[in-house]
Image (cartoon, rainbow, N blue to C red; front, side, top):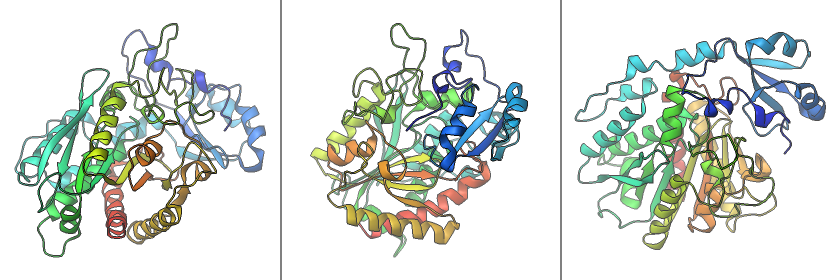
Length: 422
């Protein structure tokens, strides 16, 4: 799918990675617009081609979401495009979303409080939250790791199980914050984890049924380097923090285009290190991906994988394989379609939100080297899906903290339906 020809020059999104010092990127005064495209995509792209815009979405068939700097606002508005405003002042909304001084310094406790879900949090507090959950559930949980990152951080998660003991049931695997700026994903995954831990042992509870039937392997933040960078330097950074290839100036690989399966299919990723969907120098070469594939391989060869969910934002989609081919179908496509539709209905019943379902490529856009294709075909997961969380464009990546709890609640409803019907 054609993107704006300025995409590799976007500022400050890509250039922030190559500043001589780690200066914080300011979005003060930036406005974010949704530009309607429809049948006029080519015309809209031509009008935007002379602007250095930060484009948020890859599927441009209906609209293009762009952040516009203060210096470009008057010229942009003079184009007379059909737009709606997503953020009147992006910098102000980022400040309102997260104040690190107000939420840092979480203290160890017997059980993390549900007030955790009122705010976004610094990375080290996420680690403590996970460790505290495991400490309160000692007979049925353990902290796990899945390799290290470019900058040496350990990818940390939690393994949960039920009455039969650990490693005795098929696996369910959750990943969050693969893309650094998608903060709602780790918070939602942690909400689901919290429900499993606090609900287990209650007669007739969904949590008890889930943990007695499956082992859960949950990694809320699989791109911690990128996540930390979004909190310290550039809120809208997407990739990991891998060094720039020789002869290039741009940092970072898209971990979700780096999985070693259908990695080099044209159209589903980029070979340009400056692009948001840069796939890496070779398939599976990022250290983050090496750790994740090792975990998937171990589970495939032992208990097997019943369900894999890679959580992203935004758009409100429930996507089944495949991403690399828009005509290919999973062998159990009819069942996948039914499960996705039922999950969407369960989510809507609780949250009132509407979800689009279907195969990833034909429903949204092409992706090569993606997690769900790899885990489904190579990892042999029976069900392998991507969920794009809230919203559909009112806030995009900068989702207010007030929506953390509603997001978690509606996803818990969807998960209860999904697992009960596997």
